[in-house]
Length: 214
Image 1 (cartoon, rainbow, N blue to C red):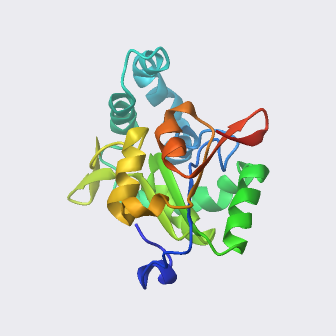
Image 2: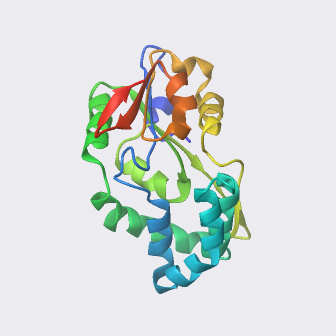
Image 3: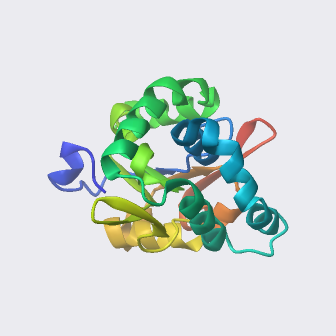
């Protein structure tokens, strides 16, 4: 999704793209489960118990990322209205995210913005709550995991593929073209983003409290 007017008007070839992972790169830790906690309130822990076996399977690499995510989404969000979740997303962005941001990651974002680069947020977390935050932070675009909706309510399933690993590269090239990698930058804290970091002209991995070029 393109957010900025300047990118909507048409890309300027000389301006580099900068792709930022979100959880652990611009934040101190994961935000998906805290968002679900924000939505569920006191029901969070009973629901968490229901999906504990799936989460254990994911952590031991016995359950695929997208399978685990759909199981969690089904337990926590199936049947919720888009309107309710949009309101929850707004309050989460206002009340929770500011305390979770990673200063070093945000500094890199601001440095690239000051240079006029196209800054794109690319995350496996749902666009549902990331889009509002990305707009507030001045990102030019966002690519996140999309959630399936039927009759105004979430189904608990994904709409399309989980924006994770190699899928991030696919989504970027689909949205911005394969030539977007020229002079590009990418930042992440996770080895699962190696396809993205290696595809970019300048890939940086958060390691030992610093961004190290790979």
